[in-house]
Length: 192
Image (cartoon, rainbow, N blue to C red; front, top):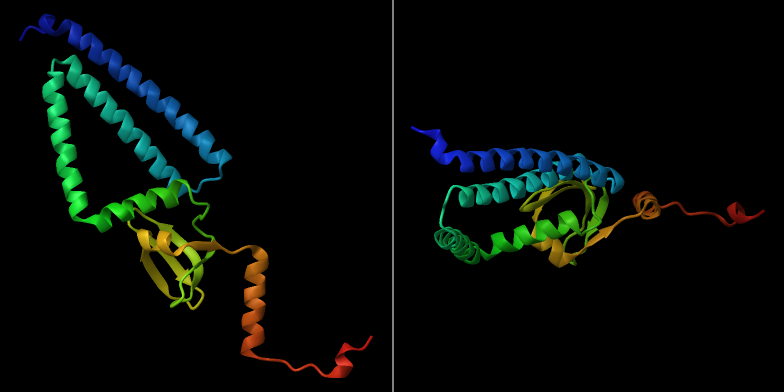
């Protein structure tokens, strides 16, 4: 096989690979600085890295396909077909799509963090506890009663989350202690 026929494509491919590596290095440094400034925990940092790498690889693959002569019209038909199948699949499973959307909102735009003490606002259940993990579909927490529960992200977004401050945590603990063992004060205890 004569490589001189593909000399231009090989040069462009090599340049694209070098550019992709440089972009990944720059992106990695930028994400590290961003996550340090915003105090984002390790699990979220990993997801951000993976999403940035995925986007870089998709763009690189698309440009590589164009360099090597894939017809843009055929390529766009192929990509639109894949997106149509994914769209129909997600529409058929509406809960999957709503959970994924909710996880993105919880992950990037909601101030709740892993390790925070929160209350899920629900009239039927008392879901107060510490956030253990937020995944693509579920919100994991350990309640104050010691129960490990998982809630779908869409349910968490529908119910709402109250992030408890340190004062509220102390007040809740004092209230729990007082209600568990009520103490009746005598009048002489209140004199100066």
